[in-house]
Length: 114
Image 1: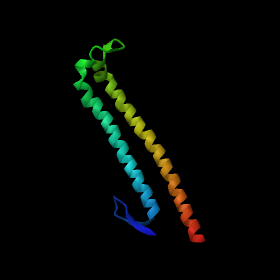
Image 2: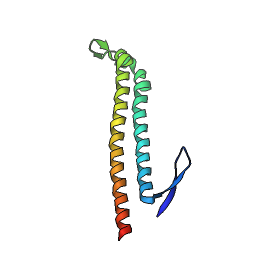
Image 3: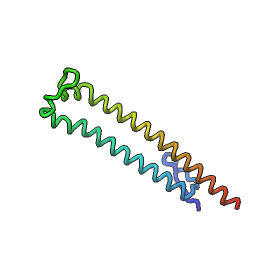
Image 4: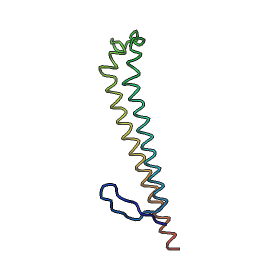
């Protein structure tokens, strides 16, 4: 059975299979969970690490105290790594979604022919 799905920007409605709708909903849920996890890591780097700066001051990284290094360079590098991780994981998720949608459509076409 096909149910109407509205395009968010134009409001145009087109039919989509219920199985495909579940795949897209699952993909969107994965995206939201991934964003939440990466934001938690970024928030910890931004807000939690400075709270423990005095305790981390005795530790050194290439001659600099760890809180100074994290404030000057480390946090920026972590944010860049989070962005790269998001891009890689979402590319992988998009490929997985495309394969599953293609398999669902092929199964639906085979069922229509039979």
